[in-house]
Image 1 (tube, rainbow, N blue to C red):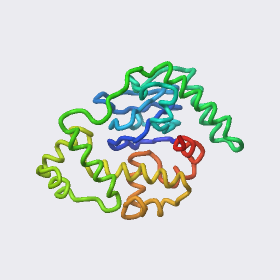
Image 2 (tube, rainbow, N blue to C red):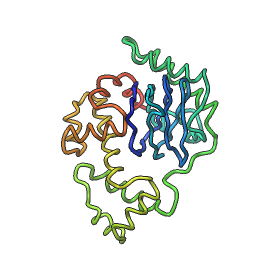
Image 3 (cartoon, helix red, strand yellow):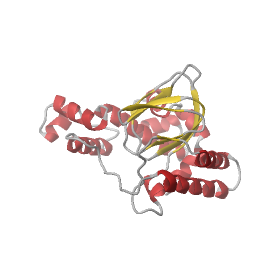
Length: 257
């Protein structure tokens, strides 16, 4: 996906897959793992699955970026552990250039073999140069981990007809306030915010498959297309229509693996 962000800032959210991007112009600022960081032109930005983060322009001129969303399985091919990146912003002109070339090749008409080959080589170089060998712990840390796993599993299973906070609390034998506090401690967001960004992730898959935004909104549980658009922009930085028109090239490839 390619996007230009003016003055808008992302709401706190997380992705089910990696987000690996290259800042093309301007400066982006984001809060990631409790720290505020910046990326400038040519920098690589890596967000690991499940990591809550924000994002937005550091100045009035905004920023432009290209981003891939490779699955954990794709990035782990050929390695013995799930790749873990200690730093979210990296300066590596060779890998950055390779990823930009892969993005351009995938966006061009014709045989996708070149783009796919370029992308896999670029990701392999990224992992080989910058990922740590040790497997990264699975699941959210802290005492709210059990609550977060239980709540997210329940919400994911009932995305179009989610339980109330009262129901979630009753299942766990806790008060509603205790659920909210534990969940936020583990994930950095409320259960509803997690549900909304999970719906956005499902809507992305439907848009990749050719569904229209209105259809995707209904199928993932949003009240209407306007509701989907508000959350999609908060999480992805672009509207569902712009995403559908502009990212069919690389998004489908990255979800086949």
